[in-house]
Amino acid sequence: MELFLRDGYARTSMKAIAVRAGVSEKTMYLAYDTKAALLRHVIEVAVREDEDPAPLSQREQWRDVVAGPPDEAFARFAALNAALMARTAAIINLGETAAAGDPELAAIRDRAHEASHHEVRLLVSALSRAETLSPRVDADEAADVIWAISTDETLYLRLTQERGWSDARYAKLLQRILDATFGRR
Image (tube, rainbow, N blue to C red):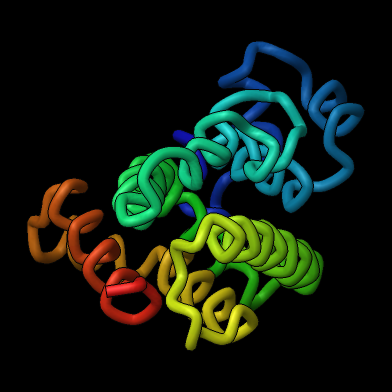
């Protein structure tokens, strides 16, 4: 991740990564067929915080979003999302930018978008069952909007890096948007 973020996707070679990892370039290619596959793995580990392939929806901290008082669910989600963005936004942004000129990365990105939308859809279903969402809310629309807002790394980066917002302030904004748009209030 460090080399990708420092040097950019195009300028980071598998050889440079191998040298940094203390392995041969051949070893790198035995583990990852392409640099795009390696970047995918780097992003997945950053998102999940570990090597466990379990999706976010199956992890305790994400299940906890719907636990507890329903009127605090968006606050829990926003705090968890801010922490996720703090560790992933820069590398996801790099991947999004590089995908514009790399068909393999573009395909990986598209699959990642579908997977993350599916995760949000599962969350919205759980929030609906927990009566967190207003009864007038369309679950499909809620999933689309929550996914679009919460996975927008450029929004997070603009507010935190360009405008100096803290993660807590970003989370509070996300919470207010979700509460106002989808909450029972």
